[in-house]
Image (cartoon, rainbow, N blue to C red):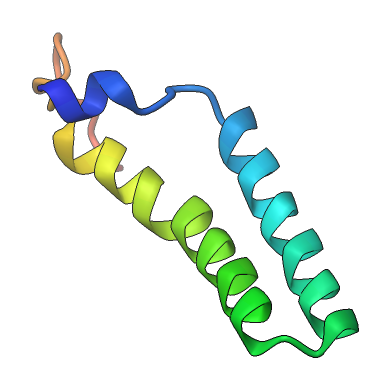
Length: 73
């Protein structure tokens, strides 16, 4: 699917975006700007929930495991 190809498959861009959200939020608190704080919170939310969820929903679904299924006992 095209959406899964656009989003990075590595975890590092999401970690960088989350850290940038914390920095922006901290700067917003220092400036006492609710808009900047909201942008920081939005960056954290997007990086930790929405992008990984989009990758999982738009990525390829793996097939069933090959070979015999192990017994739980």
